[in-house]
Amino acid sequence: MAAVTGVLFLSSCAAPPPAPAQPPGAASWEQITSEAKGQTVKLWMYGGDTQGNAYVDEHLIPAAAKEGVTLERVPVADTKDALNRVLTEKQSGTTAGQVDLVWVNGDNFGTGKEAGAWACGWTSLLPNMSLTDPADPLLSEDFGTPVEGCEAPWSKAQFTIAYNSAAVPDPPKTLAGLLDWVKAHPGRFTYPAPPDFTGSVFTREVLYSVSGGYAKVRLAFDQGAFDRLTPALLTELQDLKPSLWREGSTYPKSSSELNALYAGGQVDFTMTYGPAELTKLVTEGTYPATTKVLTLEEGTVGNASFLAIPSTSGHRSAAMVVANLALSEEQQAQKADPAIWGQFPVLNPGALSPEGRALFDHLPSSPVVPGYEVLSKNANPELAAAWVPALDEAWRRHVLAGN
Image 1 (cartoon, one colour):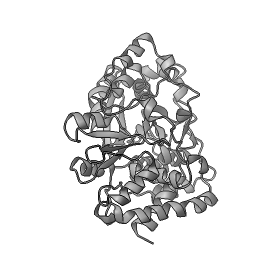
Image 2: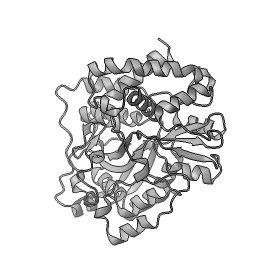
Image 3: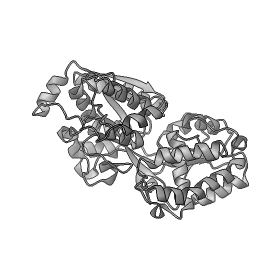
Image 4: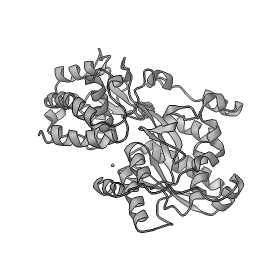
């Protein structure tokens, strides 16, 4: 989420793409864990998620310490900041850089993979990968880019729109219905400005809607499909603009700013990739007690996020230990607790031990957020990563600037 031009330039210079960096030469997990002891891992991750920060600080860092690894969380405003740092270090020949692990997905992963920014071939060495389902499409492809052992799964996400049921007693049931509601209730809705990741996915949801559903949109990027489909999207978003908060003269710069508008009663809807956060926000009184999740008939976009090790990291063994730890039953269950973070786990229920199953069975249910099986019903696939910057730029030129 900083300037993307440097990233795109560096990746475009790769012809052919650099060979991905290989994992440590250790022949066994025991050797990897032995080498990891005493190392420090710097985890670069989006710093705007308060619950995510607290989970890492209070749960993952102490657990890593028990494995002999010092884990440091490095907050960034945008994951592109981490990627740009890695690409700069790679270009300068650095082999012991300042980034050891990155919370990443989507176009940042795809761009980095193309430029050789990520170490690859290491995830099969993680013992806890056996707890995941190798046939799960959300874990084998990341916005259309094959994962191929270049990142370890961490969380599943489902794009979710929430609303104040006291202000919206008869909520719409489709995204087209939501857009109609916005036009009928001026000033009570807005969305973050792309390239904010939440704002970006909202525009992709609108693209699916105006195109007649996700099945009508080619997932792999195709310039012809882009040219054919985006005019209807841009027209819809331009038509929507006068009905938005402040008549679309300005947009929230981030999902955090949108959340603040919702909490303050200035708008009646908010949106998130991490719906479990709604539970805590309602419980602590930040959000209205009447907050509910909008369940759309056509479903919403679902994806997964991952942990990637940069090819410039000098502490790959320790980074692998942290990635494996993050996949453990204990850490996945803690992370899934709505009171801690509420992220949806990536583990295969059928692969859990009896103890692990008990951990998940004892998690509290949310009075606000339906279970993942409900939220993910009719889940829409993510477009390939190349769609994202193209749509973001089209939004900036035609909707924000009004050209």
